[in-house]
Image 1 (cartoon, helix red, strand yellow):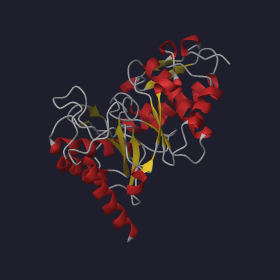
Image 2 (cartoon, rainbow, N blue to C red; image 1 turned 30 degrees about the vertical axis):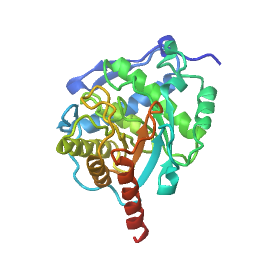
Image 3 (tube, rainbow, N blue to C red; image 1 turned 180 degrees about the vertical axis):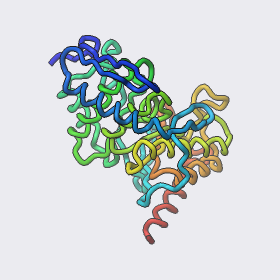
Length: 311
């Protein structure tokens, strides 16, 4: 079956009303049942959210969710391994659980098709090829934000919800979610309803908590904001922070490995504000523990497992 491109599917039109809420929804063309369901859910979510949301400054981004200070819900803290470093040792021996990820290039090999709804059978075959590890399945789609014009945000929402549903169908029992950038992290204040609708179609949240500088207080504020945002989207679903033991690109220390002390701080802070972490690192770098980040991770993992074993 040929790929369905949303540009070739007649779109819906949202007519704005008071306070930015839709006053009317006009459906045009085919696929009306699916569009109507998404629109109705999103509209209800927007209306529900609009009354009490507050803006939280997370240093670099703003979101519309009130601050939540309490610790995550009770349960085991999990350390997932999504590291691709060359020469990586067997991390399972240290208590890490291998996870799965599908990058957007696997979903859309051709950039010309990016953002279109792929063939269902082909997409689900891709999903089944990427769920060999015991951990969750993360869909990494970073260029389809839930922002912009209502038509664009709605189109992106429709594709993202469908992909999440198809992934869960192809991987029954597997935790499925989106990598946070431009999906369920730092949600624009104008569109919280779209994010709440998308949150209904995933099993967990995976916000990135990468390192841009050495400001520990700022890093912790970001962690609190990420937890708060996820809890406001759905307080019953777990939150797993994506951590990267190198400084982010486009920073003064880009790609340098983080020292053991700062990394330990991040691990311990994540323990307070999330249900677990996903460690990520790109395949173009060799395994390197010169700064002691991995030694600190092993010690942290052993301590976590020790504490959980006595409960």
